[in-house]
Image (cartoon, rainbow over all chains, first blue to last red):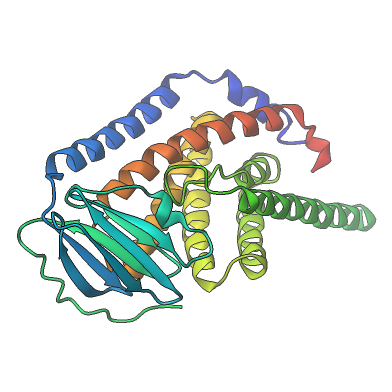
Amino acid sequence: MLYCGEAVMKEKKSLKQDIILISAFVLIGLLILLFVFFTGQNGKSVEVSVDGKTVGLYDLNTDRKVEIQGLNGKNYLVIENGEAYMEKAECPDGLCVNMGKISRQGQSIICLPNKVVVKIVGDEAEESSDDIDIIVK
Amino acid sequence: MKKEKKGIKTKKIASYGIMIALALVFSYVESQIPAFFAVPGMKLGLTNVVVLLALYKMGNGSAMAINILRIVLVSAMFGGPSAMMYSLAGGLLSTVVMILLKKTDKFRIVTVSVAGGISHNIGQIIVAVIVLNTTGIAWYLLMLWFTGMVTGAVIGVLGAELVKRLPDKLF
């Protein structure tokens, strides 16, 4: 009963603070967008990793198909016309297939069930030497 | 007095049960919807309606408790340990953010829900960064940031209407 008036009062509040907060959210989102846009040159290679370990590095401009052995099943990656996409995946949700085509540096396709990450990298092949400490399950 | 207290307690248990059951049903319904959204991990977050309701009708602690119980139960039934990790990170972060925003008493339910939607996705991304040991998620972050805002707004409008219309006596 204490709350009775609260909900009603709530909707009578001035919109100002809400607008400020929402604008801040939009602004941060736009900053991320700018960041992605400006750092997103077209990549040179496709880096495939399973469970945090890099298992392959492929030229983005050479068409090919790659079979990736994930933790719980296989993923079938296609590199075509400078774009990479997941053609098929043996995972329950198949989300990675829906992630579409990627071609810009930093973009990635992630298949969580199989712990497969397909990432577009630039010229300098990123040194992914940092080993995993622990996978928490 | 004592009797009344007991009555209140029983009522509380019952309303907790109803809310958790409702959250479970929403979770199940949502898990049955194929991923028609372009962005993986994007969900409407129907269960957040329940969390919003609990937050505004039952209090902060109840919202947190219901959310945690919901996540554990849903993960046990439909997901697995890894799904639970993602859900917990997202769920806890978004609930904490929503509680804090609600406490300031300056924001509308819709705004609180939008913040909740974003922070839910951020929580999941943080876990993804840790688990997958990758930092190449800027693109993903961008997508989930905006989808979090949109779904948070949709759920917020829905939740605000429910909070407005449902009688407090119900809880």
